[in-house]
Length: 54
Image (cartoon, rainbow, N blue to C red; front, side):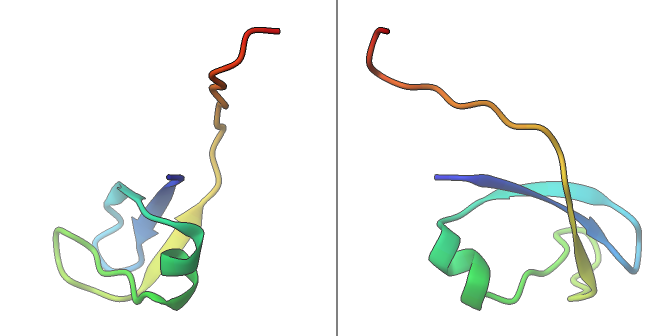
């Protein structure tokens, strides 16, 4: 399940949430600190882990 990074437009707090892609598309994200729905996606690096050996 992907982890998304967000920043609140109200209090400027950064936070991360793990959710499926379909949840991300249809869900209203709220800041855990102030409850604002003015949330921006923050782009960051990611890594991929596989279960197969190459």
